[in-house]
Length: 361
Image 1 (spheres, rainbow, N blue to C red):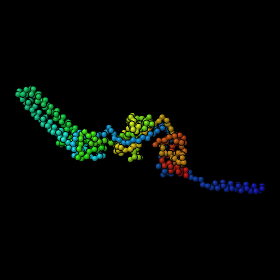
Image 2 (cartoon, rainbow, N blue to C red; image 1 turned 90 degrees about the vertical axis):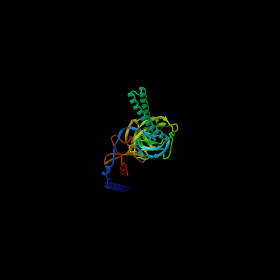
Image 3 (cartoon, one colour; image 1 turned 45 degrees about the horizontal axis):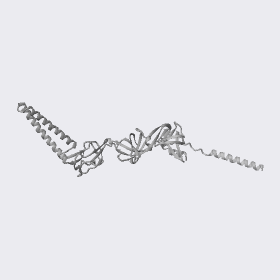
Image 4 (cartoon, rainbow, N blue to C red; image 1 turned 45 degrees about the vertical axis):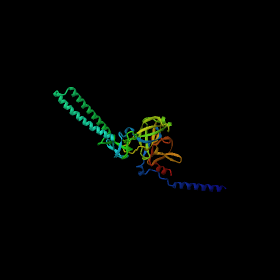
C-alpha cells in the first residue's frame, strides 16, 4: 500500500507540472485600446458637481403674438368685387387686400366733391368781398362773414377728406381694404361677390407678424407652486421633434380655467425662419433650478444593461473602465450620480456602447 500511495503522489505531481506548463503556454489576450479612427469621433465630459435641475412637462400650443395681430373689420356695407390675397399670403403694410362696391363710399365721394366746390365758391366770395371792402362798398361785417364762410367750407372739406381717408376709398364708390401691418394672412372670411355688412362681428382678415409667436401651456394645480416667472423652458413640436426652441416664461395667467382646472403660462419665441405655425401642438419642458448640488454627467453617457446603469470612464485610449453607477435623479440632458464616479473623472458621451460591448463580450 505504501508503494501505491507513492506512485499516486508522483502522478499527481506530474499532472500538476503539466498543467502549470500548459498555463504558461496560454497566450495572454492583448490589452484593449480604442482605435485611432474611433478616437477622432468620441466625445468626453468631466464629472463635476452641478446644481440639480428638475423638469416639469407641460402641454401647450403655438399661438399668434397678440401684440402683433391686426383684425380687419368692414367699416361700410357693400359687395366684394375683388379679393386680392389668399390665406397664408405675406402682405406689406398698406397693400390692398380687397375692394368693395359701396353706396356709403359713393356718398362720401359726393360729399368730397361738394365740399371742394363749396370751398372754391367761398374763397371767390371772400376775394370779391375783400375788394369791395377795400373800396368801401362792402362793410366790415360782410367781410368778416365772408371769412367765416370760407373757414367753415375749408373745415368741412378737411372733415370729408378725413372720412374718405379712413374708409380707404378708391375711385367713385369703391371701399379699399388695406393691410394696416406687414405680416401673413392667417384668417380670411371674404370671397368675391360676398355681401358685407358693418354690423356683422366677423372680421374680413386677420394679419399676423409671425416673426415672434406665443406658446401657451397648461399648468395643473399640483405644479402651480413650481412655476415662476423667467424660468427657462425648452419647446419641441411634432413637426420638428429634433429641434429645441428655448425661451423663458414671461407671463403667468393667475386664473384657472373652470373646465380643465389648469392655469396658463406664456412663452414668447423668436420665429425668424417661420417654422412655428399657430395651432401647432407643443411640448414644454420647464426647468427649475434647486438649491442642492450633485455629481452630474450628461444623460447620453449612461448605458443601461443587465438591470444596471453603467458609464465608460476614460483615462487613456488604452485605459477605459466599465463603471457601475447609482443614479440619484435625471432630466432630459443631465444625470445626477449618487455613487460610482468621482469629480474630475472623464466619461465617454458618444459611441460608448461600442466600447462597452468590446470590453464586456
